[in-house]
Length: 107
Image (cartoon, rainbow, N blue to C red):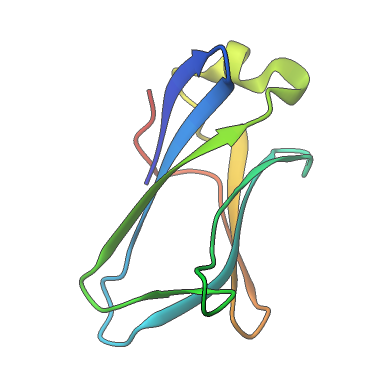
């Protein structure tokens, strides 16, 4: 899920929640936010002190707030409904990429 919660003096902010509804843990190396043209807007911190990836156990929800750049004024124009205007690209531990551009609540 992705929520745009506006901007302040530090810039624009998104809240990203990743839910593991499977039976196995998932391993995430990178989470990026891009506009529909593929221009990088921001990324989620996906490492801790011991490793450079995230592990999300079954039935676990990981939520993190990130700062994003307002390139091409995408958040000014579409902040109420970002579906189809930005995409979240998740890279797993093996390098396989998963892209999501619709289907999340925003606003």
